Structure formats: structure tokens, C-alpha cells
Length: 141
Image 1 (tube, rainbow, N blue to C red):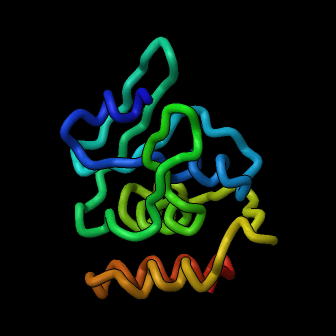
Image 2 (cartoon, rainbow, N blue to C red):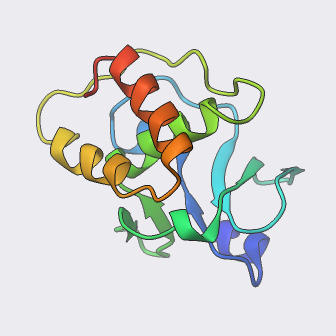
């Protein structure tokens, strides 16, 4: 619920390591709630939690975003989308997320074909190549 208030008129959703943890793809609990936004990147300290907002291009905010299955729902990246967003940012922002916790990609938690579709759908060839290289390095593709 806090995420929609923090975003205001911006588009956004919970993603990155926070979403990967919520989908049981990583066991590590992130120190902050990480949010993808069309607004400016920023860090917010609130009495409820610390929020890290990372700016993504609105063109990247398409597939792989769902509504959470909670009493008060919020937009949440799928496991595939969260990993895509994390790798995308790791290629661009001062090597943020360069080191990832151990990924648990077995079972129904993660679909490699869905992940591949997100990478293949990128229109910016240079960025797609960088994300693809990072995914290959992590043995995701």
C-alpha cells in the first residue's frame, strides 16, 4: 500500500531483489523495499520501511508485472521481470546489483522462456546485448 502512495503519479512496481525474495528466488531479505519507477531514482526512509526507487524507462514497463495476491494489492514484478530489471540495472548504474545472491531457479518459481522473451523484446540493441551477456554470464540463457 505504501508503494502507491510513494509513487504518486509515477508508474511503478515492486521489483529487483525485493520481488525475487517474495517469489522465493533468493533467500536473502533485502534491506530496503526496491521499486522500479518512471520518476527519479531516490531513497526514502519512512517509519514503515526504507524504500529504494530506481528509474526505468517507461518503455520497459510492460510485460511481467502483476497485482499481488494480498489484502491490499500492489503491482509486483514476476520473478522473470524482477531478474530482468536487476540485470538491466546491473549493466547501467555504477555496477549496482553486480553481485547477486544465490539464485534458486528450480521448480515453478522461474521460467527461462519467459525471461528470454523479456530480454528479446528490448528495443535498444546495445542494452539488450549487455543484459543478454550478463544473463549468459549467470547461466540464465
